[in-house]
Length: 391
Image (cartoon, rainbow, N blue to C red; front, side, top):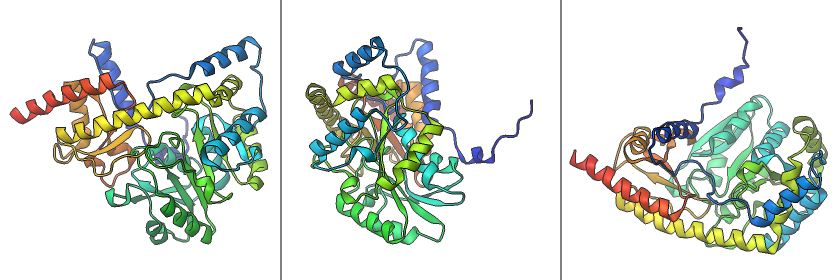
């Protein structure tokens, strides 16, 4: 059979994170013990109340289609969460429940990205974000960003890179792969510039619950024209439940509902009923203790990496990633991560997935694993680098 595939597939690259995961799985089948510091998935499961709510939903037959925009009770619970956590009034009618943050990004790009439209985003950034743009025949224009700008877009970058084909920006704060946030004042400048140019601002906030240090902040505070993506996957530890949400301007809701009806019908009914329990006080207390544990892990792994010879030019203040410069140890991050996997049994991810500008010198380290595993990984890497130096 000789099928003619759509040309847009040429603009979507393989996800090397998953390729390394497959290599690691092969080693595990051979009996090796592998420490996974590659994939960005919390090692915690959903809170007990969430699991109980899912069980009740299934037992009670709450498994039928819901509204395409989500259960009214869940949309209100998310609205209440913004009020309690961020001191923001976000009307439930502006909240669209989706099949994960990926579903939210798909809807946003379907609504806003036209053929040939350019969308600015930083290099490095999460690869799937640019592929959502490519899926609708848009062009993700990656703007190289380094430590001086916290690996994020700045207002100056937006101004200097905007052209006649630019339609908007797609930002992430905190970011995958860097774990860095955009300073609120800088984000305000970016949004103002984009607004002046008649463009759209999409802000991926799926790690927003996992920030360390400053008061909670959401881009939604910058105006009702901001489009925000969020998820139950990271802070709420529900990766496989595939539940997220999208906040859009009120005028966009009917169009987004139409898209959701046609593309998804609805998010999982069971996951939605379970998601309501995320906002119970006892669940929030668990999630906050986990956030503190992630910060403890960050405070362990960053100096440990620096002792090993990596450089961490920007301290991550969110998510559970460190973007580490390995140029003092190797001139090829890809080869280094493969060697660390094969020789030390530790999975980390090269910068190759996240953008071409400095991919050879950076690796992404995920500390979404136990402290015991982190300690063992550091010991293994100490031996690994000592042997390389001796050999």
